[in-house]
Picture 1 (cartoon, rainbow, N blue to C red):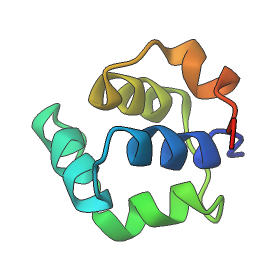
Picture 2: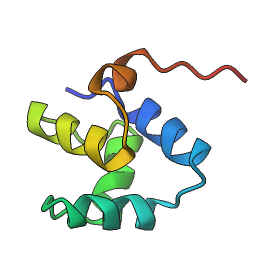
Picture 3: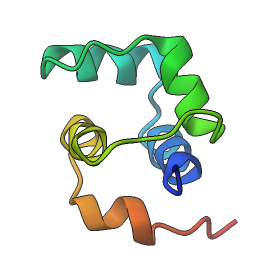
Picture 4: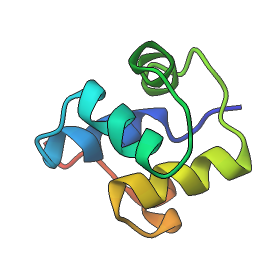
Length: 74
């Protein structure tokens, strides 16, 4: 299941990062993820495991809870 994909995209975009940049940050923390896999997560095509949620939070430099609470204010 994936309920955080949209929030990953919103947070990434607000940081001014491309999908390539976020994928590179994930790879730096030993999560080998490609840009295309990240795109699938952001579009809710691919599920996300608990450990992957943790990796995303670390790579985005946010608390895990933010991935579940973040709302688009636009």
